[in-house]
Structure formats: C-alpha cells, structure tokens
Amino acid sequence: MVTLNKNNQTAIDYVTNFINGQWFEDSNRYLGLGFDDGAFNKATMKGYCLEEQNNVCCYCSREIGNNNHTELEHIIPRSVDTENALQPYFNLSNLLAENIVLQESFRPSTVMQVTPPFPHHIAYHNIVASCNGITFKSSEYFTCCNRKREDDFIPPYNLIQNNIMYLHDGTIYSTIDTTYEEQGIQYNSITHLNLNKQTLKNIRRIWFLLAGTDVTINQLTQAITIDDYKEIFTLYLRANPLKVINDNNLIDSFENETSWKILMYYKYFLNYFRNNY
Ligand SMILES: [Zn+2]
Image (cartoon, rainbow, N blue to C red; front, side):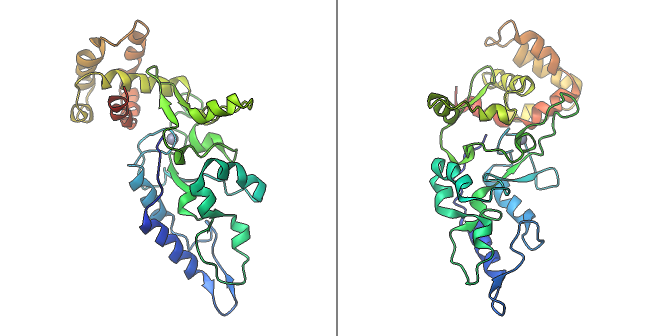
C-alpha cells in the first residue's frame, strides 16, 4: 500500500486546465467533462499517478506500468452521487474534504466554476493507479484490489499517513480498521480488498526473509534461469536464520519460474522490510 501527499502541482494544473477547456462560453455550460467522455486524458493522469507511486499498485504494491493492465482507481467511486455518501471519505481525509465535490453538483453549472473543489470523477486528488486485480485470478481463484472492491466503501488508506503496517508473517493491517473495530463497527476493509489472501502473505513473507539478508536488488533482478533462482534460494533463503520450520515448504513452493516471476513483481517489499524491521 502506498501513502500519498497528492501535491503534484503539474497534475493539479492539468485538471484545472482541462476543466476550464471544457467550459463553453456561448452556451454557458460544461461539455465533455466526464471521465469517459473522451477529452480527459487517462494516460496523462496515469503518468502522474505512477510517478508519485513509484510504479506500484496503490493497494497491493505490485509493479505496474503505463499500459492497459493498469487502471485508474477512484478513491471515492464514480457511483457515489449524494453528499451523504461523500461524508465518510471527508471525515477521514481533509485533502478530499478540501478538494472534492460531486461530479453531478459541478457539471450542470451555468456559471464557470473556480477550482478547487474539483468534480470527483476527474479530480487528481481522488485518483490513484491500481493493478487490474487479476494477478491471481486464474491460479488462485481470487481477485484483489479494485477488482475485488468494486464500488464499496473503503477508507481512503492511500491518503492517511502511517496507517498501514505489515507484520513479519506478511499480514497487512491498517490502524484505521482497528479504530473502526474499537468503535464497534465491524469493517475489515483490508480483507475486503483481498490483501490478506495467503498467497499475498506468502509473497511478503519471502520478501521479509530476503530483506534480512544482504542480497542485492541487482542479484534478484538478474536471476533469469532456474539455476539462478536456486542459487539465491540456497544462499539467502534456505540458510536464513530468521526462517522458522513452516518456511521450508513456503520456500520450496517459490522455487519455480511462475512463482519467481510473480515474486519479482512485489520487490517493493524488499525496501519496505529493510526500512521497517
Ligand atoms: Zn494491486
């Protein structure tokens, strides 16, 4: 999970200029202001999001690029169409409260608006880049991230500093979810994104073990053949002093091409665990 400040002025200016460009003086109205209307440049927005997210998925931290496999995720879903439904997001994020207005409050305006606030379908503050959620769909039979969430409420995790933590066994949890539980509201949103599926926990556990060794990122990315992985597994994982008995089977299960390739998509966690031991 990435935590963001959403303060890229170039991206803010891009949205401001886009909105101003869709104002038609002759008819006193906005036209083509929608996310899917064609004028809004999704690849440009994706570029801004990927840059500030260091090219990883906002939720699972899988590596993503500026292509069709990467999706733009709305923190406040586009389907939200009432002020009441906005409020839970605003309560958890001042950034959203200060910068976002309902698309349908903004779009029908008959006078040119000053931004912020920005309509939520196209607001940079409300958009993050996500993987397509199908990494494990065929092999493990589950989807994750925005594919699992659909339009349900989840807290704006990406906008709340220091709320996400990973345990050494690979579990992800959020202090926001804990707060909800203390208030008597059962809402485990992390589970709702499928981020604690055993496969994802296993991947993070392997990264935790690797992070405790002096293996370098170059050694990992240059491992291409099965012999290369075997060497790394032998040197850094099998002999790892942090390893517990259950890790033996886990390590075995990763020593093949498919698992290795998937593991490498999540190398974000090498630095995460090195910085947060
Ligand atoms: Zn993801």
